[in-house]
Every structure is written in structure tokens, then in C-alpha cells.
Image 1 (cartoon, one colour):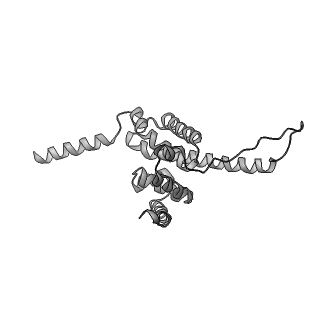
Image 2 (cartoon, one colour):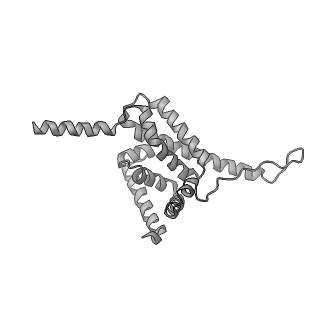
Length: 193
């Protein structure tokens, strides 16, 4: 009798971890996803676009998947969207650099594209937290894969397998990227010890 009660409470705990609906899942993940995207992109509107696009893709392409699979699927979609936006920025910056400083046929100056401001993001100013600003700056200095591993494992709490699925790499790669990120962050944030 006691064994069945333990099983029932364990199955209830598992049921609480799985969202009741796609809407409920998206509502719980929205703010964290936006913070992660803003951290990686450094621009509020780009982050919002990336999160909305990731949510739409999840609903359209994976809405029929079991709810337990939504978390790694969503983070993988968002990660790829962030990388796409970063690549577009880089290409746009190169193209504008080639064309920059020029004038069109009418003699008017051609528009130039400026990369996103890397100053502390709006959420850091709203929170008025020096610690948060320093952590964000340190995270932005990390290589992309290390930053992804850190934000997914530490900030979002995904396990190694979920993080590997979201990043499209092996469990060992996740562990390596996370270890390197932790070492770099400890060095960068030494003053906060």
C-alpha cells in the first residue's frame, strides 16, 4: 500500500513538470527566452523577433510532439534563430562596409548600418544591478558555443542531454563548453568573489 502511494505522488510530480498545453509552456518560457536572446543579440527588438519566431516554429512544426520534448526543441530552435540573426548582421556589416561612405547617383549619402549597441542592455538598467551588468558583459565575451552551453545548462536548468539536443552536439561537447565557460567566467568575475 505504501509503495503505491509513493508511485502515485512520484507520477504527480512528473505530471507537474510537463505543461498542460502549448500555451502554458510558451507562457512559462517567454521571459527567460527573451532574456537569453537579448543576451546573445544585444538588441531588444531583435531578441523579441527571435523569440516570437522560435515560438511560431515550435507551434507549427512540433505542436504534435509530446510536451516533454518541447523544452529542448524550443531552445534548439531559438539557438538557431539567434545564430541566423548574428550571421545576417555580420554579412550586412561587411556589405555596408564595402558600400559605406559612398553616395548614390543623386549625390545623397547612402544609409549605413550600425551594429547593435553592446552597452548594458535595457533589462540591466531596469534592474539597476551592477552585478547583472557585469555578468552580462562577461557572458558576451564568451565564445558563442560556451555562452549557449552556459545559458541553457545554468540559467535555464536543462540537463546535459536536453542541452545537447538544443545545441545539436554531443553530451561531451556540452560538458566541455560548459567547463570552459565556467573557467572563463570565474576569471572575469573574480572581483565578485
